[in-house]
Amino acid sequence: AAKAAGRGQYRFFSREMSERAENRLSTEANLRQALSIGSFELYFQPKVRAADQALVGAEALVRWKHDGQLVQPGAFMTVAEDSGLIMELGSWVLEQAVREATHWTKLLPDFHIAVNVSARQIIAPGFVERVRDCLARSGVPADRIEIEVTESVMVDSARSLEVLWRLKRLGVRIAVDDFGTGFSSLSYLRQMPIDTLKIDRAFVQDLPRDSAIAAMILTLGARLGLEVVAEGVEREEQLAWLVAEGCPVVQGFFIAEPMPARQLEARFLHPLVMAQEESREGRSA
Ligand code: C2E
Ligand code: MG
Ligand code: MG
Ligand code: MG
Image (cartoon, rainbow, N blue to C red):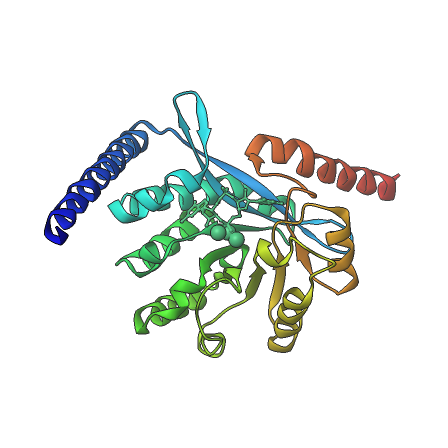
């Protein structure tokens, strides 16, 4: 009986697994086609200084235009990573993000563009060269680019260590995304060339009521001389707590949602440029 049940179970799992595999394959085929016909789009979410909400940068977030919908990365990133398509997609994201931001970095002296990079991209051969070429072609100074990696990149290996140091030597900034949600020890903070900690949304969500971990990360960042960014700020009371506790930079729906490049320009950059021009005219008049 055990054997029969075992076999039945096997068949059950095998059907479920093959359905899942088919799903994956069709997503993979769709993604492959999307890459070849250019159906991806970048959205940009503003990052602002907490104290006065001045724009300090933007994070590039990829979207997939599929069947008339805008698909979020949660629905395809795992397939892109497992299939290796992330390599081509990631190159496109980097190029496109830097291309859009070239103009913005010229307008604003402190503006940086943040690009998410998955573990697989980081350790693949040629990644550092790709970043270097992208910088050279665009003329954007290296320190205006921040690479966001999750703690999983920090956990493994000599390889990650080497790549992150090579990026650092180029002058690129490195941020730990979703900080506090990985399963890593903190010892990597001493070895890896990190500039920024991004407090995961999970620890921002229940501010100000549940603030122990956010406070701890702010202290850690200050003690280590790192920039700290709070992600996922959705409500005024969260922002108020972060300002009071001296969190330097914030990002989230309360400030602005991710948006197309032209919209970022209309809402955030044009007003700044106009203000700059007015103050110049004011001085010369
Ligand atoms: P992430 O890098 O941690 O990005 C933050 C995510 O939180 C984004 O989701 C953003 O839209 C969302 N978000 C921002 N503010 C708020 C808020 O106030 N509340 C809530 N609930 N959510 C907020 P998105 O765009 O769906 O991206 C999800 C994840 O996919 C990203 O997490 C990142 O890990 C990955 N991803 C996105 N674009 C890329 C990419 O170009 N390359 C790679 N390798 N990964 C990417
Ligand atoms: Mg990110
Ligand atoms: Mg994050
Ligand atoms: Mg994430």
